[in-house]
Length: 237
Image 1 (tube, rainbow, N blue to C red):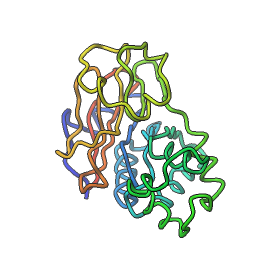
Image 2: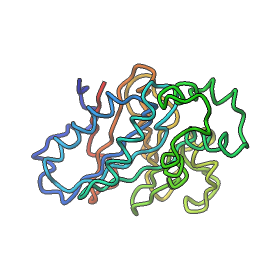
Image 3: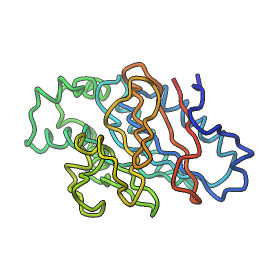
Image 4: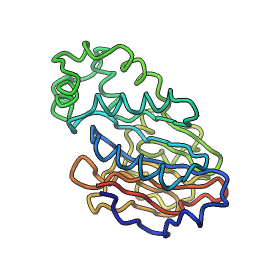
């Protein structure tokens, strides 16, 4: 089911004159069915216009279909004519730490790693497919398009947006969430689930994690190249 749009009304004819569209999608956490529905809704909305998908990380853990979510996004990235940017989330980083012997396995399993292993049909994190692990390692922590900075968690507001540590980009909550200053870019992020089911748009930042794995919808914020702010939102529940 496609959920009602939030904010600015999304009318395909309203965007028809725009050269391209950007769909920024929040935390998926193995929610394959919602992801497939949301991608279909975005493609229908684009109506053949050039478009870019930006995934904000946390593809794995908690939900039942982590392996299939990763396969789908990897396939989208390799498909001819597709423009897809996938960012690293803290859950991908945590899995890589376990593989590298630097993390706490029991904690990762409690936070959703057990569901990830089950989705791959393995019991040892070192048995995850090498191409999937290599893909997780290759994911960038941010994407800057000149108007917006896309990240998983946020930024340290005490530092310039272009001087952030990867740890902050993947893990931060406060003091970022309560900071009201303009950061030079609209910070588009996830990581902190909005259990109301609605994105959190504060002017200087936009949170599109609407708790898909906790029963909420999966959300895509829709942008154009002409203006910094979103023109609307699409959701699949």
